[in-house]
Every structure is written in C-alpha cells, then in structure tokens.
Image (cartoon, rainbow, N blue to C red; front, side, top):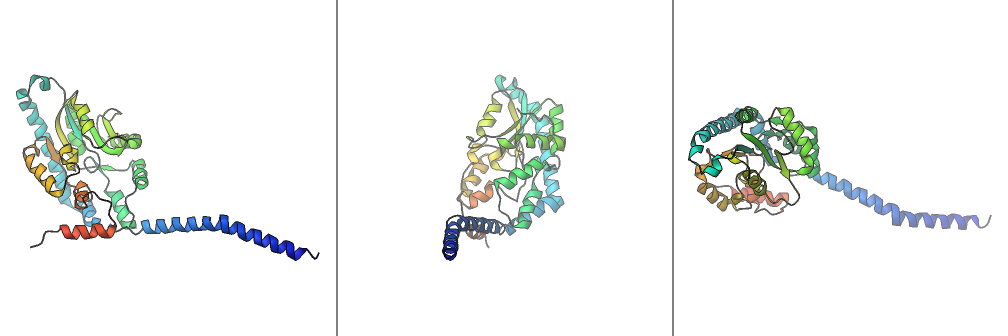
Length: 285
C-alpha cells in the first residue's frame, strides 16, 4: 500500500503530459476557429446597404431594368432588319443573345442583404449554399425578353462566372424562374482554367452571330475591359460608346462588381484599407 501515492502521482504526471501535448493544442485550435468565425461576423460591409436597398426597394431600379430589356427587344428587332448588310458568312449564321446571370437575369440581392445584416464577408461556401437554394428571382423584364427572343428563333446563352460545380443548381433556378432554352449546352459556367468569358463567347461565335450581349459588368461584353484601371475602363467605354444600346445592353448593379475592384487596384486589401480607398476615390467640389 506504501506504493499507492507513487502510482497516483505517476498517473497524474502522465495525464498532465497527455493533456499538454494532445488536448491543449486541440482546445487552442477550437479557440482559433471560434475567433476566426467571430472575426468573419464583423465584416465592414455596412457601405453596401444603399446598393442593396436601391436594388430591392427603389422603383427606379425596376424602371432601369425594364428599360434595358425593352431596349434589348428594340435592338433585336433592328438587328433583324440591318443584318442584310453584313458579310454573307455572318448572315448565314443563326442569331444568339448572350446574357450574364447574376444581377442580369437573376436577382441575388437577398443573399447580399443577408451578409450585410450578419456582417459576414463574401465566401465561396456561402455563395454555393445560396445557389443550392435555387431561390433567386428573375430581374424585371428578363423573362419576357428572353422568351421573346426564343420565340423568334434566337438562341439564348447564359454565360456566367459561377463555378462549374454550380451548374445543376443554376439550371434549376433559371428554369424555375421561367427562362427558356436552359440546357447543359446553353448554360456556360466558369471552368478552373478560365480567365474571363472571352473564350466562351468566341466558342459561341463559331456557330452563331451574337446579336446582343447583356450584363451588369463591363467584363460581360468584352475582354478589353478586364483588369483595367478606372481611367482605362473609362477610356475603353468611350471607345465602345456606339455599342451601348446597340449590341451591348448594360444593367445597373451598385452592390458589387469590377467597378469596385478597380478602386482597390485588384489587390487583396483589409477592410480598413478598402474603406480608405473608397473615401479617397470620392470626387469633391
């Protein structure tokens, strides 16, 4: 019995060592994960409130969306009449309309609003989860216009930088919202090696003549706008001025976009640095 205290003490030493080398790191990892989650819940995205509210609550936004799609219809009808002047090789091609998806035909503002209210930053996991819900509603005017184009025999392509893994959920959402011509071939999402959308647009051009391109981002129209500074985006837009309202139809999106990335010079900045850049970018009297 005299050896019992020694045995107990030895067991205590062993238990302490095990805790030190195995349990303590586990607790530390959990704490770190919790701190990371807490930090994620404090994203500085309050500045996005006005953009989300404008899209969700202003009749002016709806008016602009209807205006864009009404003008697209007029442009499509005009293209039918003027196509006779095109080179023979182009005249023989069937026509196509190419649209972006997010904030062009589908409204993702509820997902953006959720991130703002919970002060969560954008994450791929949250974005995928929203897509799996198949809950995005159609942008005003989008369904009517694309069904009009489809009935006229114009092929509709949905070219988006959503990831390819989101394809089935995206197709389901588009079909649910009432969009036509939703197939594995017409819904063209981003593959891992894609840089932009130009490769997919050129693939379409091999068989079709693109009459109209629609998007909420300049990158939806041409790769000449991609990764450009604010000044260069202005310059490229001015060069293409005759295309807007003809082949290019732009929709408003004040919530997010390449226009904001250009403010940050496409760099990975902290929330504080981004806030500073936004203030610096304001034009004053």
